[in-house]
Length: 517
Image 1 (cartoon, rainbow, N blue to C red):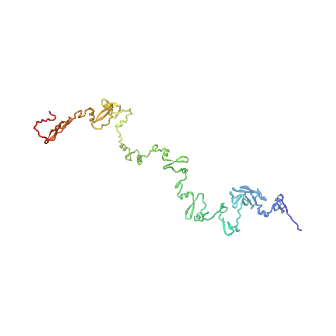
Image 2 (image 1 turned 45 degrees about the horizontal axis):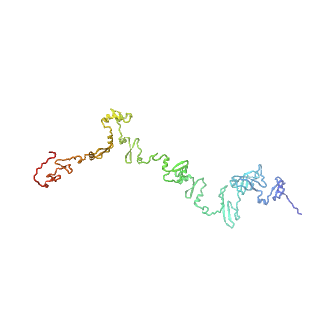
Image 3 (image 1 turned 135 degrees about the vertical axis):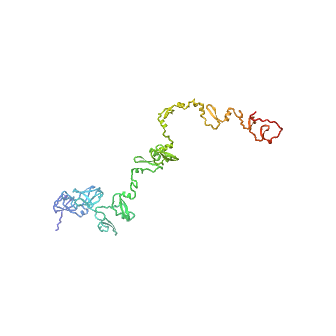
């Protein structure tokens, strides 16, 4: 009859507490997993079931920490050697709890912390290489834990990706595919293609630059230093130039062609446009400026026109055209708005200056004297001071003896202006007042009106006759023309032509010569 053979079995906790004999099988009823004892390891050696392979039970761990990670595996890592170390090619799948911020270490089951490296063990991790919730596979290379690259993708149509090229195909139309080739990326270099949270249109000239021959030429330029500029050097050729070289190429050399940066100019740039013409920028304090009119600025500088400095003058303007001259020359006017330089000798002549004289030299020896004294020669080459009285005596001008003394009436006369015409008289018109009067006015004032108060003078010449006029005054009758006779008309006597006289009987007429009896 058939006999049922059953292996030794128990729950996980009890098995972990025993050490099965070498080759002894034992079944873990808790995890549905077979173990085999080696006579040394507590709980025996675990044999993977299908479920363990699917869940990676023995190699998966949820780690804790950020840059210093810790994890535990089931069963725990036993380690090798002394001190304990991870076996080479040890591999684990870890799930991250937090984004890393820099280089990262990990310690499984306190065997020892090891640095996680990328790029085949060449580089430390940098911030955000590990993302919270992400799964990453690492393997021990004998020194560090290496972050293994993600497995190559598989084409949508099920074709494996060849070499360095990833292929995405349209499952409904295998003739449509997109390839991403990373073959040109340098070893140990990461190039990130970041997908924005939006649809991306790769239509040329719409969302990205289409092919261009100039851009193709530019593409051959190597990476350059910071702040360098791309400059064309010929047809289809370009080069990098520093800022200073580019300035020179553009004719914009700082300090020669364009103004270098200056803090004062920066301060000036804050000024608003001028309110009026002819305003000037003036410093009002550290880094502060304002505008001032010409008048205000001149006052600020102590250059007020007419007070501190000479105002414009046409004469000074004429003088400004003179050129520099020799020592001791004088500026002399030679005509309207014209000036010239003259030597001292010429200037003295122009001014009629007194030449050196022995008498003036003698006078120069006199001391300063009292007021109103006169210099008088007292001998050959000698001079002395005399009072006015002594000088008058010396000059025979003694007042009251040689010359008229002061008189109040004479002083009144002094108020008269010059006579208006010849023959005028000075006549008193009141106390201390005098005036000019003509001869006729004076005669009237004196009651000597000619012909009224006194007989007018009758001036005669040879042959004249004096006769009485209608007023009874004497008047001159000039000598008549030859052949005329004196005749009477019953009122006056007059000279009459002989032919006009009516003959009368002979009468004896006696004529007396004027001035004889």
